[in-house]
Amino acid sequence: MPCLNEAETLGRCVEKARRAMAAAGIAGEVVVADNGSTDGSIGIAGAAGARVVHVAERGYGNALMAGIAAARGQFVLMGDADDSYDFLEVSRFVEPLRAGFDLVQGCRLPVGGGTVAPGAMPFLHRWWGNPMFSAIARWWYRAPIHDIYCGMRAFKRPLIESLDLRCTGMEFALEMIIKATMNGARIAEVPITLRPDGRTVHPPHLRTFRDGWRSLRFFLVYSPRWLFLIPGILLGLAGLACYLLVYGGLGIGPLRFDAHTLLFGSLAIICGFQSILFAVMTKVFAINEGLLPMDRRIERAFQILDLERGLVLAGLTMLAGLVLLGAAIGQWFDAGLGHLDYARTMRWVIPGVTLTTLGFQATLSGFFLSILGLRRK
Image 1: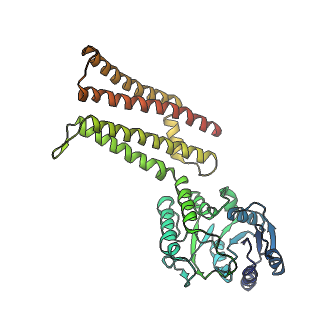
Image 2: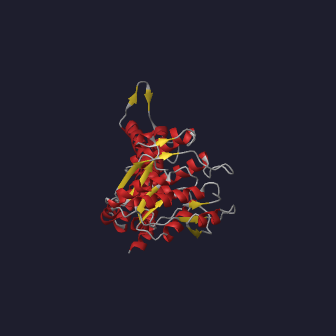
Image 3: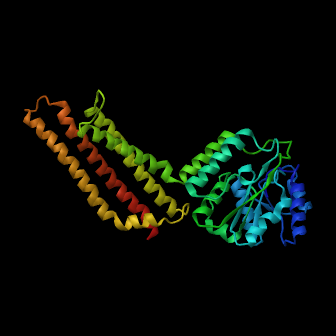
């Protein structure tokens, strides 16, 4: 149980957990990871029969990581000490673990069979934030859960130790689910009941909009595909469509497309290509830092397109751009270095500049990716 000034409710939570383990014949202990309480929580925890672990580094994730590291059990169940979770339900989490699951996530929402008591969850959390972020976790990461924020969950110690969790704040709970899913852990979900927070002295630690933004930022950082790759591909396709309209002589009704359309298309292509490069670089960095598991597709891609082949391809792209620019300069000389046919010349200049820029971007990115990859060798 992570704890920061939970004197009002901590004793009840510890007592319920100990009673539940005794009733189910579970050999266990209650560990309270105290994050600097000043309201007597430490004494209350000890008097109730819990073992207190002092955690100097502030943060929800820091408290949980220290408590998990100090726990001596084969299975670990975590839950907040505000009496909103019913620790009498401990055995419901242990049974799936004994059946072979690696992580058992509680679900408070009706969609997963759970129950939210009146006044237990803010309106925006229940009907927008939690369902939305849980849906993103299922869609982006294939996490088999419906309540990603539920703080009551149980897991096998080896699993958590293998995930190398890094987040020190409230994102810790999200990181655990996402990494467990990406590493192929067997995850079960059990319905639970959420009751109103038992504290009256101080408000909940969560902040709706601040923590909502932190959650969205976390999801995006852990998914370069949706932050960089998909937008980059869409931009690139939009740019190519502009080129097709111009060079194909296509129109839409009375609309005609020429050099200005090429400029917009080139902008989309360059920005899209840069976004795709960022997706690859972010993915490689995250894998090297242990934030994401190894992706076989990345390995195969680097085997097919190593630095040398990449530089050759980038060089050819840049050369093609320079040839087009040279042709435009040739037109200028043909005109006696005077006025040019703007529409005709720009059809050479714009793709020439675009290809040269893409080749230069690819060259620099190839070297940078090679530097990132040195750590894996």
